[in-house]
Length: 436
View 1: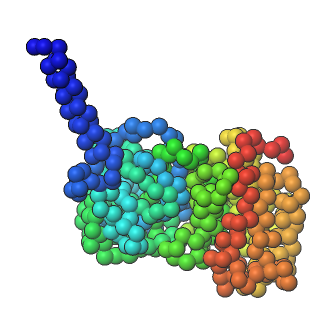
View 2: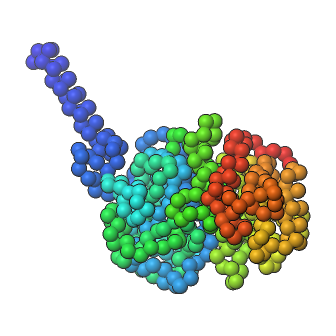
View 3: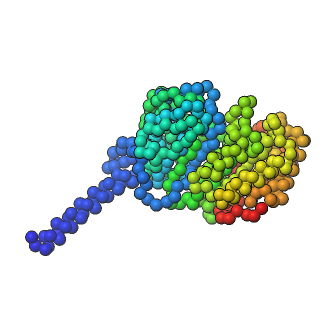
């Protein structure tokens, strides 16, 4: 064989290897769900092969056991619809059996991009099968939680995801978040990888079992956790529109020049209090912020900053806490525990509620005293003055009419936007906690 012929053969072999490698790369990480233009079968989880860091893109705080679900959702598929704040190249989910009374079995789970219609249909080729420690099935112990293996999927920021689980057997009460302001879906049988979504004929206003979605991101630097009550939960925001104040904040952090590129994790629970757990009269109000702080705030993936909006329900709900010093002491404890994790805390003033059926001069006096202490420093690292952002200048004990949802307590969509605009996003990226 001549040297020229040898070089020619070697070049040909190299070209073949390059073409094969390119085909494999495009088939695995190119246009989602396609290989040569043909639909791809659902993929299983795979360890990411790109750089980046894990960041929370969505979260919810579970509040209670869902009434009427003593046997869970045996032989049913639950398709939760959730909205991302930041994007990434891979994703994983977190599931909880916090309020279950029996082990919770899932034999099948999947993740997909929503087709964008608000329904249960997946974007073509985006369906991904999830695994847990390499296995397609998992059983979550009573009170436990689990994180799936990562799956490679190009997840955009500001997009809807479909997270689906199938439970083959009875499992006890479902752990849920009752005020999602987002329609999710149920189907009979194992329809976990049903991309068309036609079997999902039952709608639901809840998120069940799902507490978090993380993405592997090269752009996002971390996440900010927003924790609070129904105002953070967004209970009066337009359903399906993603108009909670945390959604508007996420848009600022995605697009605003100079803003930190953080995911936004909403762990608000409607009716939640700072100091007191829910009781049998209000079971969905969840445990107090102090008792759930580690689980719902400090341990979230990639957390870099915390925003706290809490305290109104401590005044409203029985047993009422009418000592402003005790309310502020609870806020200081939140900050101290966050500082122990190296996190700064931005805290909000308590918003006006004049005209609400629960209003009284006594409660408002406590609110104003709490706000005075917050504004004077020594409580939070930074203050976001939601009271000032939302109140009517002509009637400062009330919400501005344009910001009032109608109940004189909870903001409208415009009010939620005003709250997000009031946050000093530069302060969210300060590294060291202030000395209080």
